[in-house]
Image (tube, rainbow, N blue to C red; front, side, top):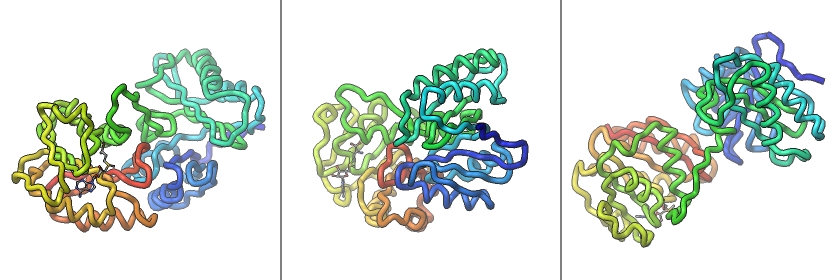
Length: 348
Ligand SMILES: C[S@@+](CC[C@H](N)C(=O)[O-])C[C@H]1O[C@@H](n2cnc3c(N)ncnc32)[C@H](O)[C@@H]1O
């Protein structure tokens, strides 16, 4: 049995959020796309959405006001009922050769996800290899891992296999399911570094273009280490100890104190980062006191803990707290955020 989309003006897509946050992502999508209907694929994480319009229109409307919690979306232009046997690999390859959107001379990448809890005797790499062969035979399109013109996204769910072709930017993230991975380095100071690396990409920041940063709640120093690597002078504030590998760095100034007890020079910094794991209201009070040290037009990247699961209220309150001081450019729950969000502001 096949599950083809007809040529009617209804599009289907798979949306993915961090575990526990799909309901918030759906709420945001519902505000942007009236009439959308949802079906759960993996509880609290992945869902199928059906909405009036084309994939391009829906993707554009969603990207124009990017939701905080929707990490990734991919079109569903075809599907097959899951057999749970190796036949599925063949079915996915068939889908790959049938789908439109690819042509000779363009490059493509194949991204395959198998939903948690789907019991199948094959792995994502088996499906990907079969799809790559089928696609290049059908279209002559070259397959790449990154920076391809088009992505074929295959999702092996509990009951069906779904597939669709899109431009990478249409998906919100060009990583499969938005699960962006960074190489873990030897001697990496903390996993928290990945959060700032992801924020740098997501918000199109180029930290190397900044000069002087203050890192509030810096220990053990993952964020500080990234900013030092980018060539910045960093003032790190934390009563807890910084990692020994950083402490003698010639561009690091370390205040081993509570941030409330540190005096900073006015306009000294063009970047303020804060990853304090505090209640958002306490954090905003502390940051407001430090803000004179950030130049006008300077950038702030701040994580906000999500208390009591009322995220939209939290963002609203933070916007109010910083009103007149910081302009919120984007709030996003990054793949590397747990019960928190990352906020990107520019100082007024
Ligand atoms: C999640 S950790 C930061 C991790 C860091 N971004 C990294 O990459 O290694 C939170 C830090 O905030 C610090 N912190 C909490 N309250 C603080 C305050 N009032 N002033 C300065 N640092 C504070 C804690 O001591 C803790 O080290």
